[in-house]
Length: 421
Image 1 (cartoon, rainbow, N blue to C red):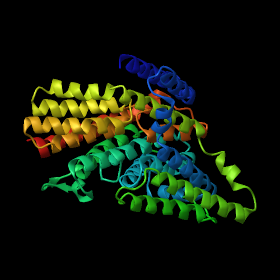
Image 2 (image 1 turned 45 degrees about the horizontal axis):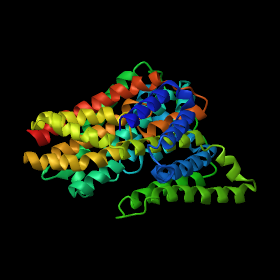
Image 3 (image 1 turned 120 degrees about the vertical axis):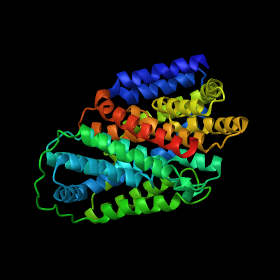
Image 4 (image 1 turned 180 degrees about the vertical axis):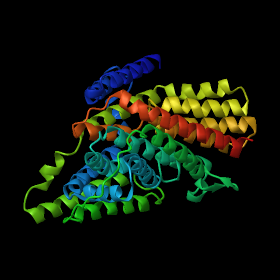
């Protein structure tokens, strides 16, 4: 267990320090975990979330055609024509990302919104780095708003026997949806403050003409199908990935036939394989940590430190979850913590809802503290890097830290008022 923890810490330190070589660090780190016996090769292969990888690859292919169609330019022209300054545009894009992300996967949201953010930045003649980061962290925030917004929400719903509407009203009280929206309002105020210097007036311009609507139809189809699939009980693990990749293949065939050129080769160049490599390495590292009992040790430590005091236990679970989820994927962490929370609640004779929601709030939002804390962040940074924009850790921290602390603090207070008092 100690060796696993040390190797994990070294790998993540290298991911931070060597930000431009993260794909190499992730590959080497995964190899070290396998060669050191922390996880077998077979276990490592099955630890990779192929649903996420397929979804990213397929979405990136769709986004290539989306960009080529000039639809992001048209959307950015329309947004810029409706709002009077750059700061308002940036906050509006973040809000829109959050709304979409409440109903589909965070990564898919970032892949759809990033091209629009890049186009807006180009028209405003500003760096797209902070805009894409704002889009990514906003999508992570809204993942906890509904049952279908994030896998962690599904895990909680299964453990607490909740349905879709319980996230809105549960046992006669406001549920996680309204807690997240309160956090979104406060965090948008923070974004407005962070981008307050970007107050250039937006000049109206002629709207870009879009002649090929097929990519837009394909992305809308992806959005609708993913939302519908989210309500399917016991759906196959690869469902979302197959949907995204199948739509990409269909669109590539359509564009190839229409243009009589190989659109598979052209679009494949736009798939960020470095990001896929980073995520694969991270999945393997987290699986090794989980297998060797590190997550269970963390869960047991919570139970011991709580000392039977509900407020202390709630505070510990929420804030420790924020910190832990800044470095490891929140899915295995939440999966390990849910039975512990249930057991502690039974022992103390309390309603577990406060601890459940506290766990979800901290674990979902905690990924916004670091550039490698959530798949959406890694994807957003990968898009920026591929577009030729350097992203430093400090670039992310300037937005991610105040955004996260404001949203989590709001949720922390609101949950205690609703469920703890």
